[in-house]
Image (cartoon, rainbow, N blue to C red; front, top):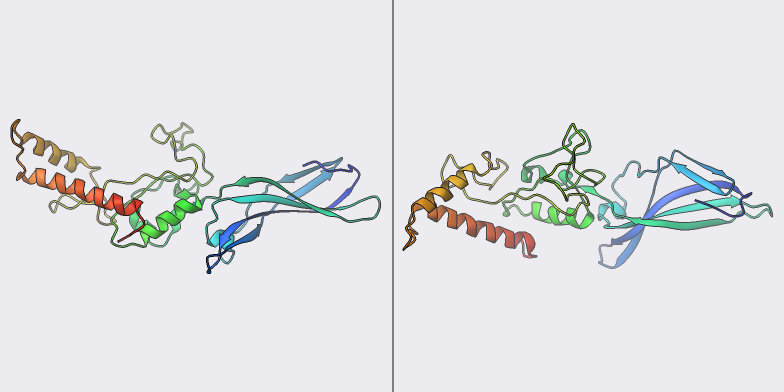
Length: 254
């Protein structure tokens, strides 16, 4: 950052974020969170900050507790001028979108079927809106759904670990908005795990494909055999998926 006059003595620099939150009454409000910086250097009209970060985010700040969707980054500078005055000025640099770890939502572990980058911050980071979307649906025990990748801790491109090659299956997942969701289902028999629980579908849908193939082979070109057990199971599975998707995307959760 640049400042004038260049011979001013910069005595303090603080970095912070602020953004809209919601109070218990539902009326708009704002909150501020202080950022951390190792140090600042001010010389010849230029201020340089190093290692700016959020530091330890503890509960009690409505900016983070309410999962603000966007915040502004601001800098407050206090100076001692040649005329003896000590003014301060605040400037806002840009808006940023914080990401929150949806994998830490209470009960989320039972709704996840994978976790990449466990030593690099994990892969469940989401915007405030996405976080709240997941939180509301995790709280609904009647909603049998499993989710996986959202975004990396700092967003950006998913890479295959340990290489730095971009994962071709994850062109998106960079902004905390997209998430992987598995198909939902019902246990057709004891050895065909459905998705109604943390067990997941261990064969990655192989048995579902087998049932679909068997249902197709049981049909004739003239009249569908709607009493075939595989046909019945696949049709019911499709209906289950549609019902749960309606619940996921709607406001009336079960």
